[in-house]
Image (cartoon, rainbow over all chains, first blue to last red; front, side):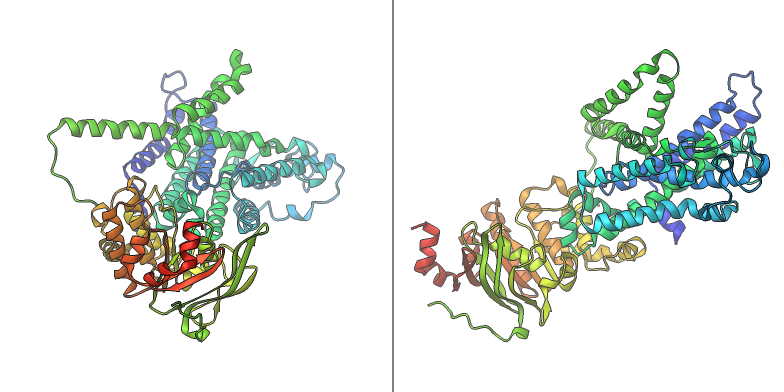
Amino acid sequence: MITKLLIESLDRRSGWFLGIVAVAMVLIPILNLAVPEGSFLHVPTYLVSLLGKYVCFAILALALDLVWGYCGILSLGHGAFFALGGYAMGMYLMRQIGNRGVYANPDLPDFMVFLNWKELPIFWYGFGWFPYAFFMILFVPGILAFLFGWLAFRSRVTGVYLSIITQALTYALMLAFFRNDMGIGGNNGLTDFKDILGFPVQAQTTRIALLVLSLALLALAFALARVLVTSTFGKVLVAIRDAESRTRFLGYRVEHYKLVVFTLSACIAGLAGALYVPQVGIINPSEFAPANSIEAVIWVAVGGRGTLVGAVVGAFVVNFLKSFFTTGALAAYWLFVLGGLFVFVTLVLPKGIVGAVEEFLAKRREARQAAAPAPKPEPAE
Amino acid sequence: MIEALTPPNVTNALLYLDAVSVSFDGFKALRELSLYLEHGEMRAIIGPNGAGKTTMMDVITGKTRPDTGTVFFDGLVDLTKQDEASIAELGIGRKFQKPTVFEMHSVADNILLALKAPRDPFSSLFGARNRIARERIDAVLETVRLQDLAGRQSGSLSHGQKQWLEIGMLLAQDPKLLLVDEPVAGMTDAETEATADLLRDISRSHSVIVVEHDMHFVRALGVKVTCLHEGSVLAEGTIDEVSANERVVEVYLGR
């Protein structure tokens, strides 16, 4: 039944998208490992990690598009779920260091030794065991989203008010994580990772594997999102986005729908954060910064909200631009570029890149049909 | 001659409003409003602007809580204790004054979302609604004469077509009671006539309350009329009786 659901939900654009992801999963490892370094086609390892980072951002954008593009919940705090997933992974990676830390303490991470702590806090228990850490990667963002959503949606907090409290949520978490007493590394965060599942984090093959895993998660999250948005469930989400109280008068419990999609989206964001951390080698409280969450909203807006593919395209486009502008002489202008991009997209491409391409293709098709002899009118679907 | 308001046995009425009052910031939208609707009855509600027609609908559908008074539905279900979603599930469907359809969805999907079926997230994800729905959607669309537009995006429909689509969505819910707020506002004469036909058809198998300003339309419905004024019932009876009532004339002409 699940395969049937999946097949029904994929249109041509989705097919193209998944095809490209699959090709990247095969091609990038080959171009990195098998093509000699001097060759024009060689993909350097630093680029592999950079791409891996972008893919994680793309998954975050996808999660955000699910709640914002389809259900109209403009979350300005989705970075919090991403960072929480990242911290759960970071805690696992810290436990893998063992006695190889600077202080060579077999029981405590370096920062705890530095703070003169004697024993491991209870909430660190179990993080050395990957299945538990994996559970926490999903559970912590999920439960936070569930509790937050339960309170907010039940009280019918919507629109800009909801956006503001999501922003406050991530800001509060940032302040909390900055404190050393939280026991999660304070403002230095968690870093200096050695192994993941027994493989050295820095090794070229591990980096490749992490990229391939990220791409696989991107494909999986995309397919799941497609199934959701093409089902009746997805139609209800769009109905809520466009006419919330009308949906309520039809007998739908709007808050339950919002809660399901918000929690699911937070879990996806958490997974993305967990894959992000080993690829960049650090997680610190600045990941909770409100600006990060807002940037994610810009990715989705640039790519085209409510299209799924657009979220991914937007994340890649904006982050490539960011990498380009923040290296070298142009670094001082990046924020102007980002701001300008947002204004440009809002004014000129209100439906984002994907929406604009779609409109262009539709117009061309119409023009072609007008030019060709009129086909006999098709009966309505 | 106006019929006296003799309250029938509560449990016999489909809808029973007794002495309902609502005020907003001191403005009394409803004052001691009492109204009884029998099973299978169609009732037209008229009244000048601000008479409380829409507030009455809001009270019945759970959007507004009355300050005082009782509202019972279908026996002894106390509507003042339910929220919008449970009231809809009990079998009260509402068409709004301003047509509100889901503009981004196709006409058929609008009906699909309205179809009577479990409303929780999990049934809509895994439920069989997508498969069984086809014939029921077609049947509803035929009743409201939109079968040729099933695939159209509903945002592109004309005003009159949107009104019909909303009525179709009401039918798809298969409610016991339909609340229809100004169904012919902004319609052409031909559309108005078609809508009156449609509502008469529907009233054969459903109870209906229609709120409308258009006297020609109300006359065409040919049902019992209740005239509201300043939040309470001014007159009740046939359209001829009500329109001959001196106080009704006074209220409408502002003498």
